[in-house]
Amino acid sequence: MKIKTIVLMIAVAALLVAPTVSAQDTVSSASQVVDEDSLMTAVEDSWILIIQQDLSVDEEIVLEGEYTNRGEVDRKLALYDQDDDHNVTDRYTLEAPSITVASPKTRFKAGTFVGDVYVESENFKLTTGFTVEGNVYFENEAAKETFTIEGGATVTGDLVNNW
Image (tube, rainbow, N blue to C red; front, side):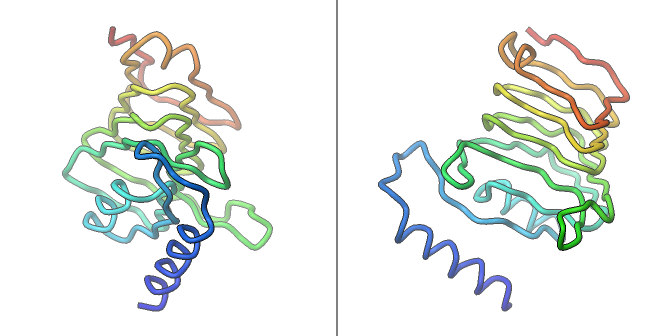
């Protein structure tokens, strides 16, 4: 309950000091994900989804909307735990039938996603040893051309043009 209260207070404070936000922009806070319900809530209203345990869900996951972090467009799926110096200390696995990336500048960091990834937006990134155990489908040429994979990230399946 304390975490929810703190997150709510941070979100309210951010709204009070944030500049005018257009209907397309979304201001949000981090979401700690512990089960399928909290994952689906976080997908709808958080710039960062923090999953600190293995999790398997039956629903397809869709990351939509434009989110900001410190004034920059950003969206992040974090499947790891870290120490005070931001070193990854543990990695987790998220399993779902698929995840669609429709939010611009989305990155998946440290951990494993088991399922297929459908990329509709530009500047999708896999980083810090993230593993996709499945295929990555690009829905358009711009999504594929701006895709980056770095920091030891891997895809066990194929990179597929889906246009």
